[in-house]
Image: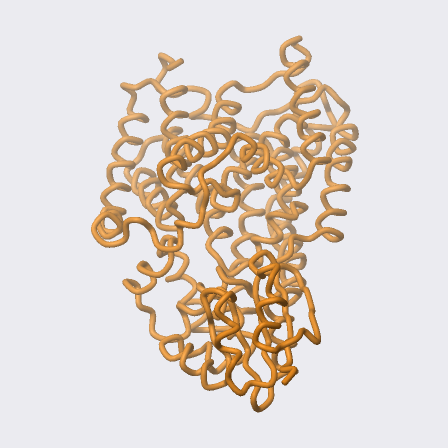
Length: 498
């Protein structure tokens, strides 16, 4: 319900303090006095975790798209036509790799840096608009997230989206706190940057709109400044919007996503949390906080809860509905909403009527299984590197290597022939000269095999390999002699029996 004051509590949001808990006040005082040290420590911790895993896995198709775009002069129109992602990350990646080189390690290093800054900004955001402990707890939950670790060293836009999303909410709250021309322009620029980072992130801006409508008087200076900022943001995004409407509808590479089903929401929340155990722990914290709040044993700022709840729920609900028209309901597209989940859990922890040591103990109970899953059950990418290494060992005169479906030739080429990958225009022809071909269907491979080829290496995603492949090849007098299965990829070697 809108309030009657122009400057509501949301707009002033001083860091909350537990007046009855001396240990909590001491923690807050220490965080205030050592804010810079904590911020740098969070960056360093995240960099160590993410950079240590950069080479652990080869690149997969989506990363290959990003890396292919920076192998030569940057072509914005070409990239928009080939990739469903918004252009900001591609521009940033091109600038980054122009300095460090267009390698997978350099590209993932950019995401690691952005993700590490996100952890620090979570602390800064929480300390500024909630309290220092909330910011610290949220940053630690983020750091221990296996999902955030995965996307924190993936050569895609998701780490950038998270960082810009927090910055956008930060500018949004500053604008509502004290509307100025500078803050209006900052909010506009960051709102536009958020959608330029990822189109689905527009739902975060809807969450900001709903927050403003719920907490700010519609005739206040703050609301007027907010409206102006969003009009300016729309103007800044207008060129990209016009291009998408006129030249790139439907978005390329987006037709493979299926419409959502009810279970997808639970799947996304499970991915946000990091697994069923953490879902249970998060639910226990929320349930306890709600019950204590209703009984008066815990106090929460209504506007803060509204902000964080809308930041989490609105993107999920809106994209779920939108996906029935344009399928896009994927947890990586909505990863920016998980930042609100960390803040909500952290805020609930700091409000529990426990001694400060008890709050840190509850945090530890959550962090231990999160960190365990982070190291023992990391999210794995399709292992095209291992598949390419097997194919290279099999390479010889009269050997044909087949990759299916054809678009998977892109990540395969990066590991098979870096020189071919570095020339996107001629990559397919170069790979063909090396005896590697992309084919749409393995069902037609038997006809190809009737040529004088003594060995055929078939590389395909594990779930795309036909169960009748052996029969197809046997019809052309080829029998399987070796088979290897890696994460998401299968390699089968056939030799002529003639």
